[in-house]
Length: 459
Ligand code: NDP
Image (cartoon, rainbow, N blue to C red; front, side, top):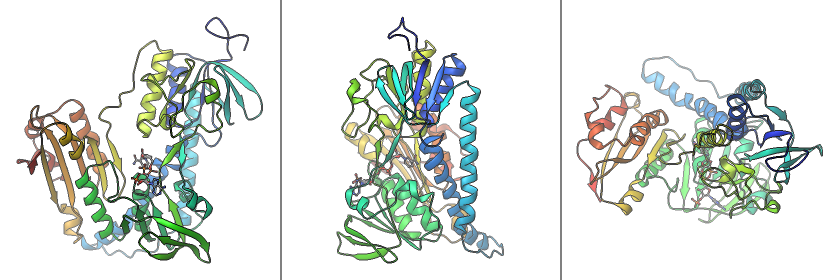
């Protein structure tokens, strides 16, 4: 660098710290669409949480774990199926190869866009300078913090050597038994995955019902189905004491139970990766969890420094980080003022069955305005024929005055796919009558969404 500010020259127009979904998108768009000179530093593997230790390997594990039930169903459909045991080692080898491939795709995308990659940790030196682990300093007119988050472990779990979701993908062998602590996305998803793979799963959640913050009825429905499928789910239960013993970890819980589990997994939330980055000393504001505080343009209190994705702890989902990264690049390098839209973001929890959700829960909506609730629960054709007790739940929360659909909540096989499409209609402001005017596709589960005639309750 030869100076500072607009009149000065820098090594780069943009330096991105973090090679996850948000950082990579911002770097690629700034470089390939707007001709910016861009560098990106990543200390671990390109692709970040989503690709390396999150959404992608998790979803592949969801697929892997679903075959036991599928094979049972196949028998009911007339197939002679003899299922062998699940081979974790064989699956993991394929999983590792797939992640290597995807990491390569991410790298190639950056290379193709002309982004300089530093395989190194980077920390902030001043508002325009980053220091790499080699000691080298690099300057940039704009710096984007996209360092994501990491699992949070309470002290009791750290001292007992409990695993996190990061470790699950690297297990050498599947345990026979596992205790999962937590009741959020990650805890519920891995409880279902490991249960499907034949592990004896116990799950402790400290609150009254799993998946706090989601629609109450959906939470109850999922909890029931998880128990029916074999997860030993205990709510209102937490760990008091844990210690490593022969054969695993001895755990004493608040309900007085004592048991030994081969593995214990903590899925008790995630914290933003800001430690040691040197942001606070530059005047970048950090929140209570250590998150980077940004405005609607993803700009921090230091004008040259921006942040996107989980490190800002807004909506911690990959597609949101991607939108934030893209909006940042459009705004700063494309002379187009674009804000990432955080309203009506749909999401899916990959429990088995899946949970797809968009908009307000019944509880949120009824606190704000008069509503009608349309809901149904039924046994889907495919599993009913196979003799499984699974039930699907679908629910629309409708504003009594405007008739707009405020929220849609689906617990069903493929609910993640369904909610993506329902979200388009709801984002467009569809009313209940718009849903009703839409002719059903038959015979599919989702047709129930357009044939819900009478409200089950008003509030
Ligand atoms: P969540 O915040 O969803 O859940 C954390 C859970 O841990 C809660 O049940 C919480 O209980 C519990 N908990 C927190 N602290 C403690 C403690 N000290 N002792 C016992 N229990 C505790 O976090 P996750 O880690 O599950 O997921 C992190 C984020 O990642 C999600 O919020 C989501 O944004 C994203 N994600 C998205 C996925 C998807 O889109 N499918 C999949 C996985 C993750 P309480 O409710 O009482 O606070």
